Image 1 (cartoon, rainbow, N blue to C red):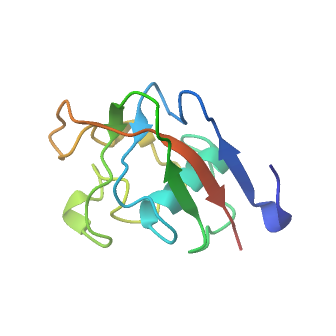
Image 2 (cartoon, rainbow, N blue to C red; image 1 turned 135 degrees about the vertical axis):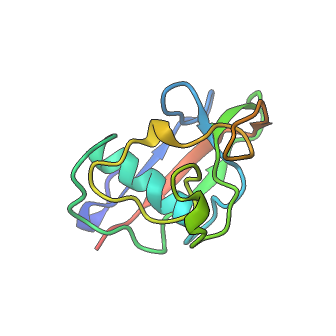
Image 3 (cartoon, rainbow, N blue to C red; image 1 turned 30 degrees about the horizontal axis):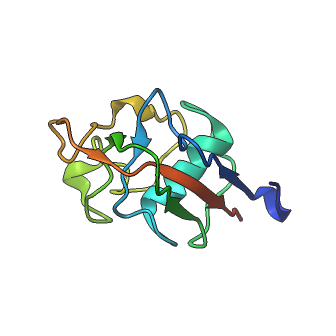
Length: 127
C-alpha cells in the first residue's frame, strides 16, 4: 500500500517478510527503531542501493503470529552501538551502497541458530 512522500506499507500474512531467506529480528522492531528504518531503506532502495530519502521515526514493524519461527537477521543491539554497526541491523542507519547480507544471522555478531517470530508487516515513511 503506497502513502504520500514515498512511504508505503508491506505485509505478508502467511510466511512473513524476508530477505535472502531470513526474516528480521523480532526485538527492536517497533516504531522509531533503527532496525525498522533500515528495513524500510532495504525495501525502498534495494540491497546496495543509493539512498535518496531519509526514513522517519514513524517507521514500524509488527511480528506475525502463527507462522513458524525462522532464522533472522541480527537486530537486537543498542542504537548507536558502533562496535556492532557491521553485524547488527539496529546499530545505525544504513548508508548508500550497504550490503544487508553482511549483517549476522541469529542473536550475536558471530551468528548462531536462534529463530524468532517472522516480520509480518512494515510501515515506512520518508522525508
